[in-house]
Image 1 (tube, rainbow, N blue to C red):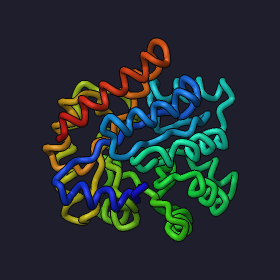
Image 2 (cartoon, one colour):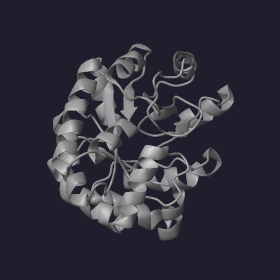
Image 3 (tube, rainbow, N blue to C red):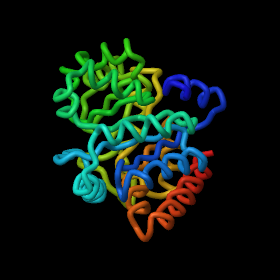
Image 4 (spheres, rainbow, N blue to C red):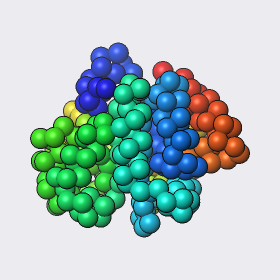
Length: 264
């Protein structure tokens, strides 16, 4: 499995935009999550963001919150998620990016947590409630272990903070397209082109845009604005949760193919 930064380098050489789907581990169940990872990998995902169910997901909107609640009610824990990743990661090409809040990391101890996720095959880490001021305590040991910690830029971030985040972020920079939580929206925020241009002025690192992208046309628009990656979460989580597990898997496979086609 390639590193995230290596994957972006290869995509850039071929003038391609990355597609990064997000799903919540354990919803509707862990077996379906495993099949979903394989289907997304086969249907065009360049990387896959896997959310660890958490009881207080501050950055997530109703769709992902509900998925996390369902997974927690079924007893899904971090060790279950890592066990699944360890089983599935050798079978897929797309690097797995773990999405988790900071408290579970602190609870296990930073170094212990990082070693565990690396042993499972995780390549990247997104921690939405990790402030820039505390990021180095995670980024430095993660880099030594081989995990790339991806930091988020909010649409309200001033230029000096964007620069500082860009300097620290590994793999790519995650540009949050809206002020607020995750969720499907009719239109992608109009500030995104200006933010991308501003970020290009301070960094050469890849930039992924997420939060609010729910349709192929929106993905295409974000690519045309100059993003290196399109990140889609709630729209995948919603499709996977509807109907039977087999119906959900078929739905995310078709949606993934359509998104990839739109940005190719």
